[in-house]
Length: 191
Image (cartoon, rainbow, N blue to C red; front, side, top):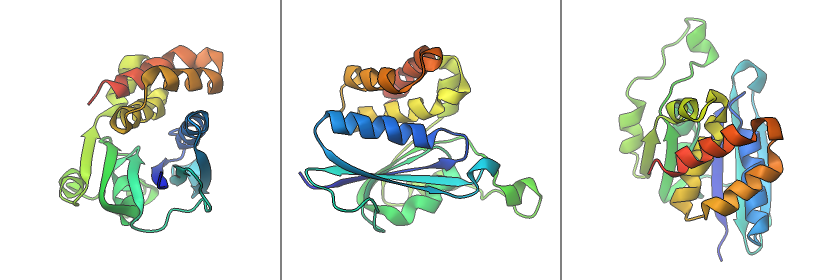
């Protein structure tokens, strides 16, 4: 099998690192060689967080080169657009449609870019844009948005939900387990 590349993009506090951990453990369980790389911007201040996950029969580097990502899993629209240079031709973007204002917008120094959804729909990729936040709220906690996004990816990638739920059980504290499982299934059932 050729190496597959998944770029997870979000902002600090959205759970991109936990998502990569669960995803990586799922892929290891499936017998793949994996490599993971995390890039933290000003994550504690709501800045960009990007995690790169590569998997296949044999993976030599954790870094995704530009124009080689099979999937961008974006927890926020602007982060999806920022990650587009990494997407390969014919790749897919799975995007949470909610906006989180970056610091320059919060400070009044810039405006949040208009019409990003149209841009994403016209970028040449398969674009799956949905309100993951509302799905997380419906599951019981907005903080399970990351599992909603993981569920949407798992459905598009053809992974068995029961296998994914088993990995979630192994990696999420018991106190938060049920809401994260519900969030995963809400994301899995979106598309």
